[in-house]
Amino acid sequence: MKPKNRVFLSYHRSKPDTKSAFEISENFAKHGISHFLDKKNLKEGLPWRSRVAFEISQATHFILLLSENTVGSDTCCAHEVRQALACMPITAWPQIFVCLLDSEEKIRNVGGDPLFTYLLERANRVDINLFLSEADANGWLNSTAPESFFSSFMSMFRH
Image (cartoon, rainbow, N blue to C red; front, side, top):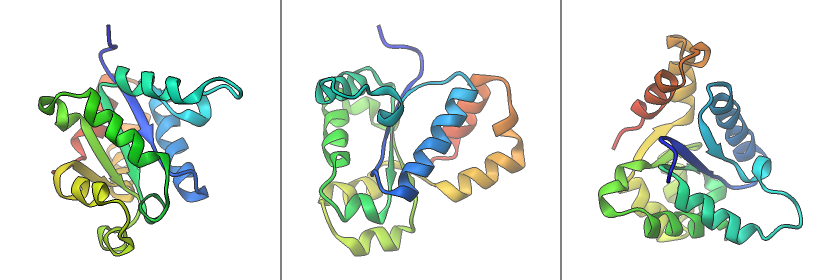
C-alpha cells in the first residue's frame, strides 16, 4: 500500500541542481514528508536501477527539477519521467510536477529530449525561486504541520 504522500525527486546531478534538490529534501524531511532523493536514500554497491524503479512506483507525487543541465545532457531524468508516466494512470497526471530551476526560455533553447518540452507544456510547474520566496514570506518553511506545508508546496504549481 502506498503512503498518503510519497514524493520522488528527479534532478540532474550538476552542482546547482543538486543543491536545489537537497534544499527541497531538507524541507520535506523537516516537515515529516516522505520522499526519495537518490543521494540520500541509495546505498553504494546496491542495485540502484531496481530501487529507483520501485521508489517511482511507490510515489504519489513525482517532482522533476528541470534546468538547462537536465535538458542538455543524456541523464537518467528522462528515463525516470518515462517510468513515472508508465506507473501512474492518466488520471494521476496532476501528480507529476516540474520545478523550473532556469527560465522556460533557457530550457527551450537547449533543445534535447522532446519529453521535456512536452512536460513544459502539459505538466504542473513552478519556478523554484518563486516558491522559495513565497514559502519564506508566508512562513511555510517554519510550519510544523506536515500537511499544511505539503499543501502549500503543491499549491504553488500551475499548469
